[in-house]
Length: 276
Image (cartoon, rainbow, N blue to C red; front, side, top):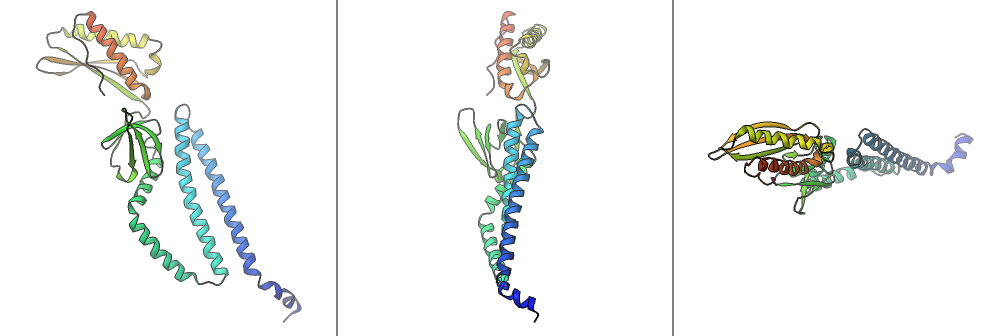
């Protein structure tokens, strides 16, 4: 054996330790890199939106990217652990086989939880709704207060809190996505002169546009649709307007009050109360 090989022999036993140390350093580097990329991508997603949406979109992006980062962390350190065991000349085959059996058993027992997480991932990815939106999910409805990877938390108008697992969601109705429409249906007596009643609705619409406090909530001028239904004793008139989502119900109440005053001034019956 050469003198060089003889001189390196004392260090041979330390070679696996050095390689394991390199693996650990690489694992830490990859995890730090994944976190940095996640933070940068989350900031980029948030900067792509503005105004009221920025905070909600940023929180959504952070939740989604944190989930992806957690998955990446598990993968990185699993590979590091397997490589380290190989450096220690430990047969990882039986360990992997046992881990596979345990993992399959856990996945079977927690399949509903896994389903919740997968559904939550796609809800966030597809941007179906955001914090602050008013939505209907099945029989539950309310304002979205929190979105995690597993559940959505809704606050109903009466203060009740609904916690909805994502895996159970079949249909979501978003009432405040991008824009909304306030619809005011006004039943009047069939004996009332329709042209006078429609003029009252037009007056209420014009007053809403002229109101400096209410106008910013309107995305278009109110439209008097006309007669939409005729009953045995009433005819239903409709007034609708495209509005800022959060102001939908405020605009409805204001229009109802204005329509009621306009109809009363013409001697026509009162308007109904706002719909819940």
